[in-house]
Image 1 (cartoon, rainbow, N blue to C red):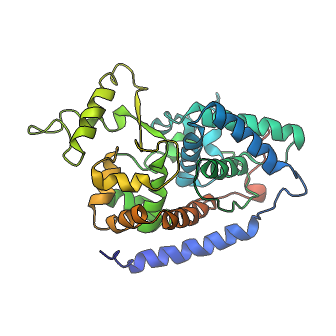
Image 2: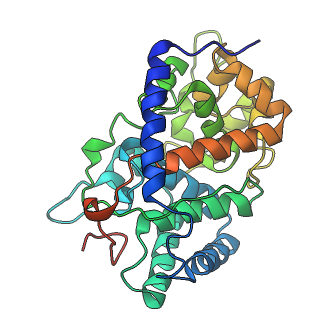
Image 3: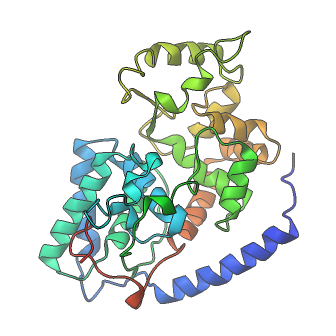
Length: 330
């Protein structure tokens, strides 16, 4: 089945987004810290290696943190700011961000602390997050892609600015397509980015509606593999008393960045409703099938899409600052 042709409106949006990305890329460089902080990459690499060895879920958590920072308002480190009396409800306090893992935030603290000792006031938290996410994807078997550097950190972080601007696990494919298109991403780019679900886990409350009391005729959503649904029912049996109960997104290779996420979907092994929906919907299914058949193509398309995301809504120059601490404005 061939992917549907893009609409004229999307092509216009893509042209605008491409122009923006060229401008963003021109203000950032691949070797931004080569003179001002020559050990930047080494220090970040040491921090992520130590953290990932100790806590193997750090990679997935950091990748998710990066997406939640960039997608709503741009890659500006606004997700990292803690509440204060003057700003009691920053982005990280938004309902959808409350489940972001502490290990990812802790990694940023460790890396920033080390960088401030080596080159104080030089490296932005948003650059650390973008680089750490890339390095961790590579560390767990995923592709390497260039990260342009020179972002500044935002001084603004409001939970109200991210509500309704992040994908939810129960969104329809039409809702997802509309949301990603509003940020300049095509259907193909959306499906490639969703492939990040090849690592990490989801809390049971995010998919409980599909495995308990689904309908009068079935306790679970029939798009699930029956044995998988029954196993989920057992794994999540106590989720109302313990909201931290969770399940790996990819039950086959949960800590490896590969294309098994896509291979699982035709078998009814997609954990979230949105995972299973992108295999069912004719607009997204061709890309799922293509990535399931060709990991190299998935890696290539994921790299291009996440590099594009890393340039979205960036701040440079006086539009931002270099924070001394990632969780507080200067």
